[in-house]
Length: 127
Image 1 (spheres, rainbow, N blue to C red):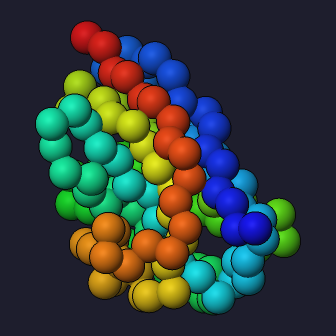
Image 2: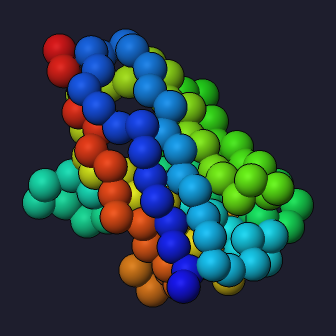
């Protein structure tokens, strides 16, 4: 069974850092794009970052460029999201997910294009 499991969320002060991890299993990791998405209360789930399993190319939301870095290890079937200089507006449940589409399309259409979702991990940024 295909699975994605997130870890690493928690409470952090504004300006601080967290590193989220996503561990995948049960599917051909190198044939999928893996994205990080987030959803704050009352808001739509939005794309944060995406990395291609085939060539490692990346895509980021404008709101996190220069602060967040996505990386992957195909052998371990893991994808990490390093989040630096966290802001209050970064508070959300963060999900990793897999898609057979390219990151350029996937990051903007998660509900339509996701094949597999993780369960989510809470990130709370405090002042």
